[in-house]
Image 1 (cartoon, rainbow, N blue to C red):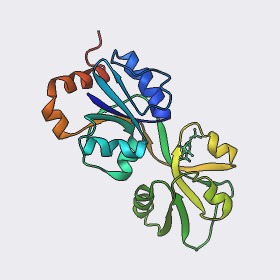
Image 2: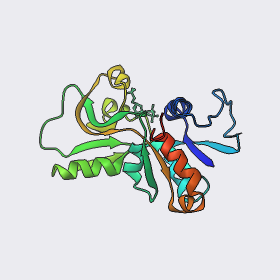
Image 3: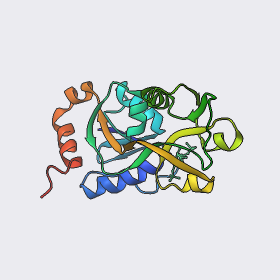
Image 4: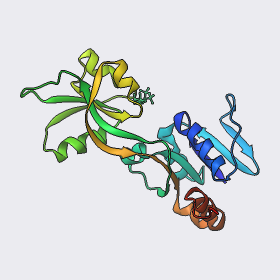
Length: 202
Ligand code: PRP
């Protein structure tokens, strides 16, 4: 199996969980290598935003990625297992002193589609500014009035004197695959799915 793993927070939690359910794992300290082969499986480590692309194009059979990214990009991959890690929430956050008034709200986010659909569902006309990271800076510098972002521990919000206004939805990591991978290797893939779902637990 070729397995694409989102680097960073998800990678560590995924390794712990794979080990717990008895699946092959990659070495804890892998240095700068972006691909590691263990027991005939190839693990590849990519940015969270790119995991589904490897799976969609057949360069990986399966992947582990945050549900936030799948919700934002809605790629044509199969979300086959809800994983019990990578838990956080998508929220509207901003300064403790909220912006009131009639001016159109400016919202900064790494998740522009989620931000647009959230405010549209409330019939609120906003301007969404798409950023690539450090989104908390936007309300601090006047770039935006508030943000739509993931909150895990809340440490980044606290450190920047911001607060959560509203939770939009909760998030967890997902195990994904494609129709093609499922057709090519159904038995092994189904065995992995059972393991990860803990369906074959004793
Ligand atoms: C994510 C997210 C928040 C932070 C939330 O950013 O965009 O900034 O983590 O986590 P916390 O509630 O535990 O503080 P990330 O660390 O991925 O960096 P980025 O801002 O560069 O995208």
